Amino acid sequence: IWLLFWPDDKPEPDFSSANKIELLASILAGNNEDIIRDAGYGIPDDPVIRRWGINKLKISGKLNLDVRPPTSLEDSELLVLFSTMINGKETDVAFFLDKKLNLIDSSYESIEENDTGKKIEIDETQEKELLHQVQTELNQFFEKMKQQLASK
Image (cartoon, rainbow, N blue to C red):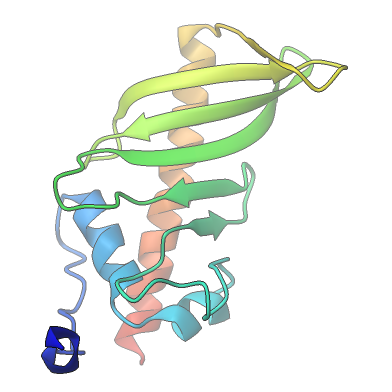
């Protein structure tokens, strides 16, 4: 019954915030599904979207990011998944980012010919380049959402 009285108005995203996890959560929780789709980003279909926001965001770009926002306010990490070529092999990558989009942890798994994964290590330079590209694509998303939401 308490859901009947829950306010539908959610606070506007604070694009000046240094906390990118909170910013992402506020964009995804603010009834912005049509705006996000119109801007070219992938989110689940309306029937799949949970009442409290969007649980997955696809950002097309050089890396085609699959962003998994935190599921609770206590979470302090943002999970970003993507595939890329590393040392000539298709590699699935998982980055865990903090609120300033700095790398907390990473995982690299090359996809072998028999479709099994094999954990691999990459050098620091490669990781920094990938992190920079992920940060760039996420920041482009935030900037585009700032423009789109300002004109709604």
